[in-house]
Length: 210
Image (cartoon, rainbow, N blue to C red; front, side, top):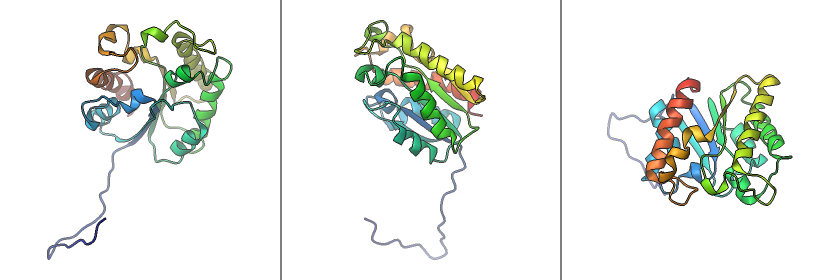
C-alpha cells in the first residue's frame, strides 16, 4: 500500500500517455506460455515488442472454450487488433463438437464486433500436437478437422460481410518441423514460444496489424 508520495521542489507528475495500438489476444496455456523464459519471452510478448503494441494477453490454461463472458470482456476493452488461438482446450475437454464449434466461433466474434466492428480480427487454429492430429476425442473431433472447421467459419463470416476477419493455420506458426521443441507433445518449450512469436509477428502482425 502506498502511504505517501513526495515530489522534489519544481518537479511535476502526470499520467503516462501510452499511444501504442492495443492488441488483445485470447487462448489456452499455449498463449499463457507457462514455461517461457520470462514474461517478456512469451510468444504474445515477443509479437507486441516487435510491433510496438500495447498487449492484453488472455491466455487461460485449460480454459479456452469460447466462453461468452470472455467475448464480452474483450468487447469492452480498448482494442485496435484482436486475435484468438482456439481449439486445443475444446479438443481436450470435448466441450464442443462439429455441430457446435463453428457457431461458437460465430457468436464469440459477433459479440466482440458489437463494439469493434472494423478492426483486424485473427482466428488461429491449433498448433501442432502429434497425438491429437488424427485421434478423435470423445465427441469425434481431431485437430485436423478443427482446423478445417475454423477456416470455414472465417470464410463464412467473410462471405457475410466481415472483410476484417482473417484465418491463420496454427501449423504455419508451429508445425511438424518444430516437433523437437514440443517436449510434452502439446506445449512448446521456451525456445518454441520465441519461435511462435517471431513467426506470428512476421506472418500475421506485419501484414494485418498496421
